[in-house]
Image (cartoon, rainbow, N blue to C red):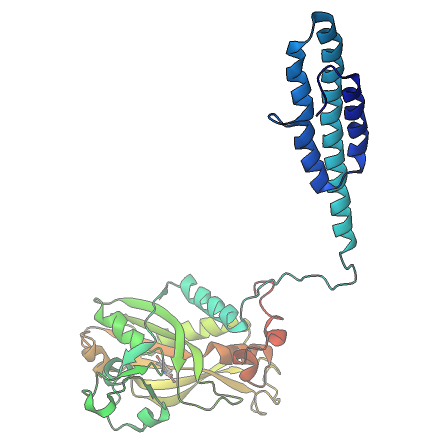
Length: 355
Ligand code: DAH
C-alpha cells in the first residue's frame, strides 16, 4: 500500500484503471474489491487518509482521487457488461441450427368421443338429459333386474368379466363385474325416483371378447330410456328415425326388424340405408344396402316392476347403440381396431376441427 501523500500512488491507481479493460471475470471481481472495497480497498484507504493532509493538498488530491474513483467504477461496470455479452455470444454459437425444431403437440378429440358428443347433442335437443353410472356393477343390475333369467344364454353371450375373487362363494346377484352394457344404468335411473324419465347414457362397457375387426374388449355404448304415461312403439320409431336423419342425413331411409332382448318386449333392430353407397349395395353394407345401427324396444314390464315402476300406469322405450360402430358406418371404416387401437397417426386426423 502506498502512503497517502505519495504522488506515485495515483499513477499506480491509474495503471490499475487501464488494466481493468483486459481482466477476466474472476480477476475483475477481485480487483473491484481490492480497489473500491469499503474496508480494504486501496482507493478507499487513500480517500480516508486525506484527513491527515494540509488543506490545499487535501483539496487537490481529493479531487484527483474522487475523479479516479468514478472512472474506476465506470470501467468495472463497462468491463463486466463486455464479459457478459461475450459469454452470451459464445452460447449462441453453440446453438445447432440444423437440429429439428421441437414440436408442440396439439390434441384432437378421439373420433369416438366426437361421435358420442354429437349423438348426445341430438338427443338433448329433443328433451333427453344425460345420466351416467359406474363401470363396475353387480350381477343384479347388469342382468337380473334387466330380466335375464339366471341360466339365460345371453349371460354367456355377454362374456362377462367378473371382478370378485370370491367368485361362486359370493351370493349370486351381488357378484361384481365390469358392466357388459350400459343398460344397468337404466335400473339406477328408475330406482332413483319416479317417472317420467328421458335420458341418454354414454359410457364404456366390457366383454371378454378377442380384439378383432368387429369386437373390442372395452367399447363405448350409448343407452337411451324414455318412460312416461302413454309412451308407445310409435314414439320409439319417431324418436329413432329423427335421430338417424340428424346423425346421417335428412333423406336416410330406416327400417325396423323384429329382434330379441330380455329387457324389451317387443324388441327391434334398426337399420339405415347404407351411408357409403346410399342403398345400392357395397362392401360396407355387404351388398344389402342396409346397415344395422341399434337395438331397442318397449321396456319389458318385468324390468319396470324390478325398478319399482308401475307397468299398469307407465310404459316406455329403450335403445342401445355403439358409437364406434356409428363412426365406422359414417366414415366407412373396415375395422374397429382403427378406432380402439390407439394409433395416433390415424386418430389425429379426426376431431381437429371439432368434428
Ligand atoms: N344392451 C344391449 C347390448 O349391449 C343393447 C340394447 C339393446 C340396449 C336394446 C337397449 C335396448 O336398451 O333396448 O347389446
